[in-house]
Length: 59
Image 1 (cartoon, rainbow, N blue to C red):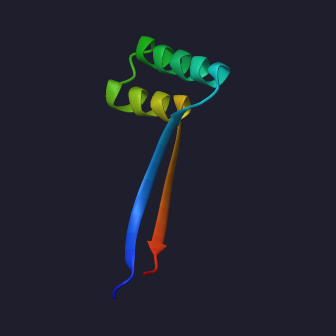
Image 2 (image 1 turned 180 degrees about the horizontal axis):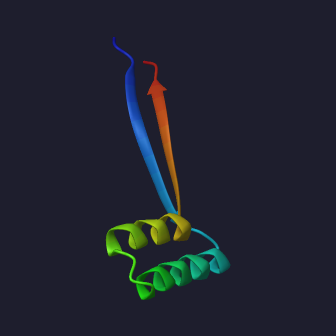
Image 3 (image 1 turned 90 degrees about the horizontal axis):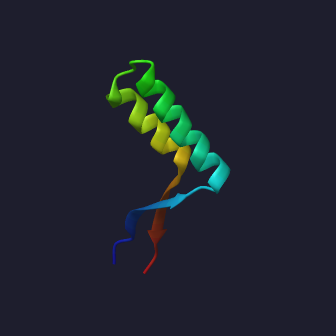
């Protein structure tokens, strides 16, 4: 048997105050003529809690 490796990505929204801050940061960046390719991912990283976990299951 070969050990199996994997990756789990958990995405969940943060608490409401941080979500509002992330939305405000994204809106402010777009209002200041920042390209959407930069503003939207930054706002999403503030709004969502993203965790990447590597795991290895032994069989």
